[in-house]
Length: 165
Figure (cartoon, rainbow, N blue to C red):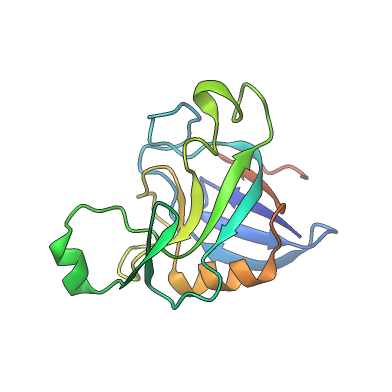
């Protein structure tokens, strides 16, 4: 399995080993666009892999902070208590860059930037950029993807030019 994320299309494609589409999901990448620099709040491009899977067995909407469940389940009332919070819900697929100097090591390290594929409140629009750098998915979709892939799955994030990973 492999994953291809189109920033231009706001889609995540799950592909089999032959490159055939298994499933397409709508996502939300960074409101600031694409970019690799730490502190840019942009979605990093290039070759990555899923370094870690976090949240197996958690209920949909479970709140994660510091990659640990808080015991809370997201609700509009909880959101009203913490306005402006960047909610990380349900599951985390933590990405690591594979291209030294571009998305790995130094000021461009995807993993040190804590870039994830993760769930977000279901009232957040998919198909429109809006994250702080991560790839947001609906809770049901991130849970589905989480069950379909192992850690180590290759991920290609691109602006508008797909390649074979």
